[in-house]
Image (cartoon, rainbow, N blue to C red; front, top):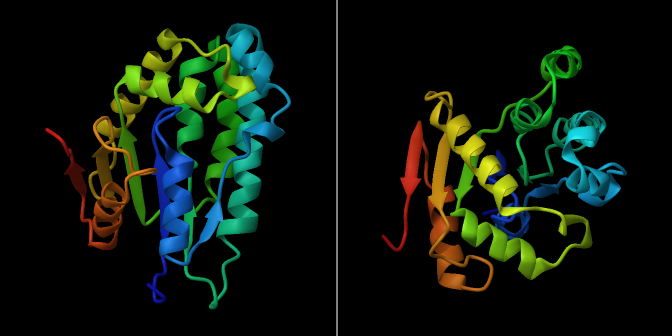
Length: 215
């Protein structure tokens, strides 16, 4: 796929495999990887232990990190680079802000900053939304065993999952969106599952396309 030139964003709730899929796609498509680095956020561990008192600083830090990445790693591609695969879309930042910020004043403050930054952001050519049941997400989170995620609860993940479903239910129909139900597949360890996804991504996607394997 040496002629690949595009901007693909992989999205979905915590534990669904965004970074794993984006890593494999970047290799297959000879594309630049642009990934979130949760380990850099100094507020995240405290956030998972006490969401109410640590939401604003955590979300503002992610907003600024994502903006910096957009300017440095996505907008600065040159003719010798074959596109970008990212494990998030910038718009997802507002999704989390609406969900976790505790007051209208906090959200208004966040929104004033986000509105300024969003004017200078490129939108992906294709968004891939990975779905999974909450039980599968919790299984994945526990399996990878990140210390920073030890405080995550099923209730929190279920709320995040519902927020993603609501967001993509109202997604702009004129944009390209591929929705993949990952509950019954393993694209990390099963090469056939991965190849099926890769083939779908290489095909033109106009509007919304669904892939629901195993059902």
